[in-house]
Image (cartoon, rainbow, N blue to C red; front, side, top):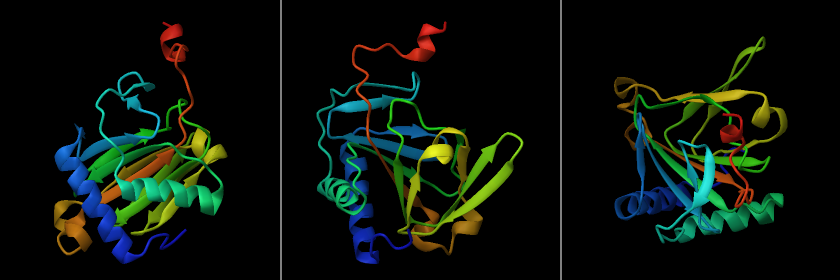
Length: 190
């Protein structure tokens, strides 16, 4: 959905995320920084690919909460978890499928610099999808469970004249599945 937020809304969201980054808990990964915000105090653990209790006590920035309400109003989906990724020029995210501790529907809002999301499926090749600034992507069904997706940001040289200096923010909205008391299925197979 192109232009799901306006340019002024985009600027407010980027400012709110930058402020949250400077005052909150974040994780630095290759070419990107990740922050998580949850209405139910559940945090995704990148190592175990499972949810755990979040004891950091930080609150969700109001602009993110407003977007969660808007997603519910516009599309009928009650999201409770937001992962904010700040991608720097040349940054990437490796091919993956989102973890099973999240429900079927995932929304991703692109802010700042545009990017290309690549979908891969064995014997089906690669399909690229342009993600312009302020666009909202919905992933569900086959795109969620059968295609791996990845992202490669343009290099610093390619980004020097792009909006926001080539920096891209991705706000990924998910519904957590309550897995308290349920062991990680990946650990059961060990």
